[in-house]
Amino acid sequence: MTKIKIKKGDMVKVIAGDDKGKVAKVLSVFPKTSCVVVEGCKVVKKAIKPSDNNPKGGFISKEMPMDISNVKKVEEK
Image (cartoon, rainbow, N blue to C red; front, side, top):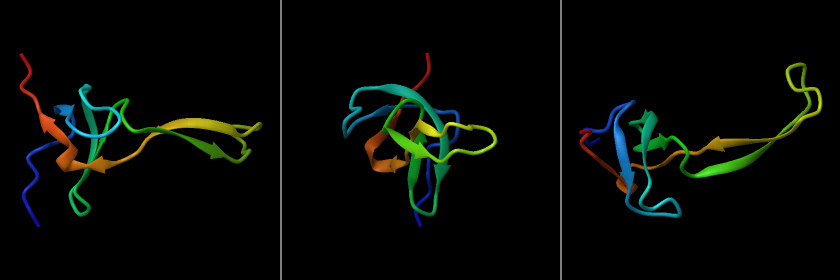
């Protein structure tokens, strides 16, 4: 297992994929799978069933994990 240099709250730039070029904050890091969740990147629409909290059900937008090799840490100025 390699040491992960990106932590929750760091600012990163997406260097590969559909969101290439975006600069955003890391919401969470998964070291075992070497994935990160970046705010506003790799957003998918997820269907949810009706429940007490959401009686109609419907769709929610959710950020999905992306591989850590697709992001680069940027220094905050």
